[in-house]
Image 1 (cartoon, rainbow, N blue to C red):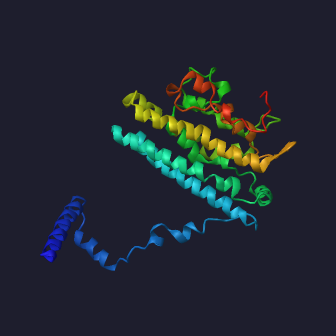
Image 2 (cartoon, one colour; image 1 turned 45 degrees about the vertical axis):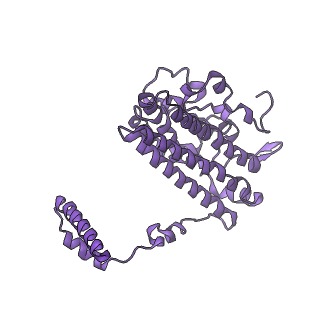
Length: 319
C-alpha cells in the first residue's frame, strides 16, 4: 500500500516535470539522465564554505586584524539580507499589507542583530593591536559601504538624505543627480582644514556614484516611504515598524560606531583620525546629522530631540 502510494506520488511529480520541460521545449528524459550522474549536494559545497573561509586577507601579521575583517564581512552579508527584503518590498506591486509588514519586521530583526553584534568591534579587539594594524588599511574605510547607502535610498526620498545645512536651499529640487551632490555622508569624508574631498570619498564616488543616482531614480516613486503613503497610510503596526527602522538605522546603528570610535580613537587631549580621513566626531553623532527617513511619523519635538540624549564625552557642553 505504502509502495503504491509512493509510486503514485512520483508519477504525479514526473507528469508535472514533463509539462514544465515541454513548455520550454526541453526533453525531460535527458534531464533525468543527468541526475543519474550528479553527485549528492553537501552543506560545505552549497554555501561555498572553503571559499568563504579563504576570503580573509589581512594586510599585517597582527592577529586581531582577522577579527576586524570577519566582522565587516558579516556586516555586509546582513546588509545583503536587508536589501533582499527591501527589493521585494519596493519592486513587488502590489505588495499585500501582511507581506509589507513582514518585510519590515525582517529588516528590523536584521538591524537588531547588527546593533547587538557591534560589541565585537567595540570590545572584541585588543586596543593596541587595532591602533597598530589600522594604519595598514589606509585609505579604506567602513564609510565605503555601498550596501548601506543603498539601504538608505530604498528607505526614503533623496531629500531626506541631504545634508541638514542644505535642505532649506534645496527644498524645491527634484533632480536626484543634483541632490546627490549634497548627501549628508559626504560631509563626513571631507578634510577638516581644507574642506576638500578625502581620497576615501573620491574612490567611493568613482566606483558607486552613478549607481547611487540610478537607484535613487529607480525607487523615486516606490521607496518604502512612498509605498507607505500610497497603500498603508495610518496603519498603526506598519507605522510602528517604520519608526523602529528609522530609530535603528539613524540613531542606534551610528551610535554603535560612535562608541567604538570613541574607545579606539579618543585620546585626550588629542583625537586620532579615522583610517579614511573621515571626521568621525562630526559624522557619527545622530544629533548632528538629523537624518530621519520618515519625518511624517514623528512629532516636531521628537525630531528636534533626535539623538540629543546621546551626547558623548568628546563633545563640548556648548556644542
